[in-house]
Length: 261
Image (cartoon, rainbow, N blue to C red):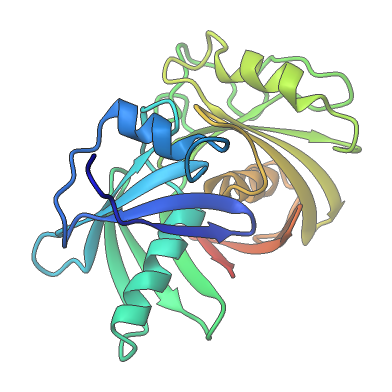
């Protein structure tokens, strides 16, 4: 049996198995992903991430895999975890560039705990989300009792955000998979349920595409703030409370910058 070295990390409970392929070339198969992701017989994780040799002038390249074996284009908390490892490798650096399927992401070491990642340009164009047909992306006609219509957002990966008076009683296991696989979303979608505390603070729960319920989601936090900002419900700098803490999201010139531990 092949021995595989990996690192287990999490950002606010959003957890990852990270394999450094720069030092050991490992064939990442669907079977391997399934075994490592399993929470009862494996290491258990929301996503598996590999760190790969990067092109010139890029600090590292990453690939992100859901437990289902599908590739994920972007993962904010996972990118911050990889950045933490890279900063530990070279403590003279305070900024990094990381190549993902969604493009080049810039990470900044804010202090000994917090790392910031610029997730790049966010869009609510129906083609970029993508949706299967043109529609008002601020009011996607999906009905959830006690919540607004959906807001479609692309943060390197697809999201749909619903705002409601309370997220305490939403049955995510019922609505999450139905919305993830809704015909509107040809590439499936991540789903966020949001409760607005005030214009600078929200609570969020997430159903991640190909994963299920997770304790946090960095790109989902970015999508939620961007959606609320576009709907004129939120300021451009917002604290996003999840089960194990907070992420801080800032929207600057249509780009989302995420900071957290």
